[in-house]
Image 1 (spheres, one colour):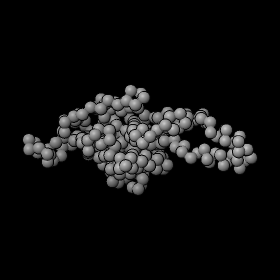
Image 2 (image 1 turned 45 degrees about the horizontal axis):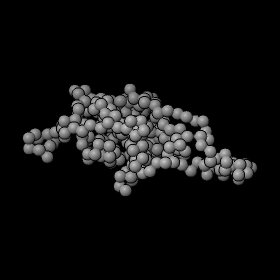
Image 3 (image 1 turned 90 degrees about the vertical axis):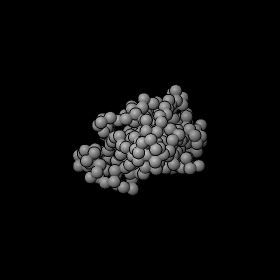
Image 4 (image 1 turned 180 degrees about the vertical axis):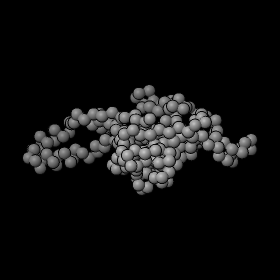
Length: 241
């Protein structure tokens, strides 16, 4: 249950941020989310708690600006990856151990930073079960691939990375159980998606609107319940530079 609650919390944070997203907008503290959701994601995906990451969300707009630069009048949204050495309390062979520090403007960019590292630095695959699934590698503590002498910074070039189409809710999501939703939400975060089409409950609203406009109950029901009611189809934008 705790794992499921963390996954829902992560999705909620992504949706809240998307509601206020704007190319010239820097999220207020209450909209940036917290690192706990991404630590829980790492444990679900890698099966390891906290290793190999140190995660943090920028504490102020000034700090974000120093790392991310500016778009218009506000800091851009970004994540930063760099190597750090931390005290090693589990081994007597070395006083320190290598970890990856990921800093970001919000929980959305933080999850994208983890996904970027796993895909582009560790050469892992984070995919859908029906598309071949994921290929996850494991490394010993302190032996994870390094970023290199220079920190890596990726900035959003547009405020929203959108994913989903209306048919998916009827064709696929209707069969999803808790595990499927958990994997899907984690994939959204690791891919940097911060705007998700959420259709739950839309049919009831459509039904009431059409009925109030004069449609018969039978005709209204036949129209609303069919799949693919809208032709709106979009694709996720992989917009990091």
